[in-house]
Image (tube, rainbow, N blue to C red; front, side, top):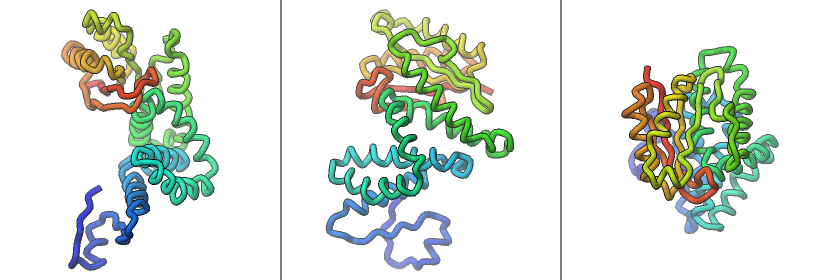
Length: 261
């Protein structure tokens, strides 16, 4: 969000720009202004080009969950104000929101909420905008995305069934690679992950998520670079930090590789 301090523009100048207009009072305590401005930003920024496609309860739960997470980092006072003036009224208005937020909490504890879930929801919604069949079933599709990722992380650190490493949906086919096992890091064993990425590509995975722990960040970066060099069918489109890794430890690193056209 860009904030401009202005003195001479009229109301019409603002509205003609086609941008959000946010009125903020010069209060002594800026906590409420921070909360309202932050919430307004998230409402504008989340799911660009696809807001109307995503089920309202998931759209609102995503914004509220992320907002509460951001405000909590600003301290308990800011969090409490956010809960009182934003979160509580929203939960009262839509009873579906709170149970969904609780499920998001589980995903976020393993880095999958912002790492994969939000990206997949947005990708599916973009693809479904002009596909009447999928658009009319977006609620079911988002629920199935959530179910799949919950099932996946619940199996770690035990053996994860092969069928859960990827999912083929009506719009996207995605899969996961976890850069785990200390022996791979110690031996700089990137070929193992290059081979797995090649297998995912052959199996039809169009969007491959690579997740690494904070203490193996450098190795995970080398894995991602090696896949892009040696598996020309994939290209890196995003690299991102995580608040928690797949082991529930603070930090973490991820990347999204997408099949080349």
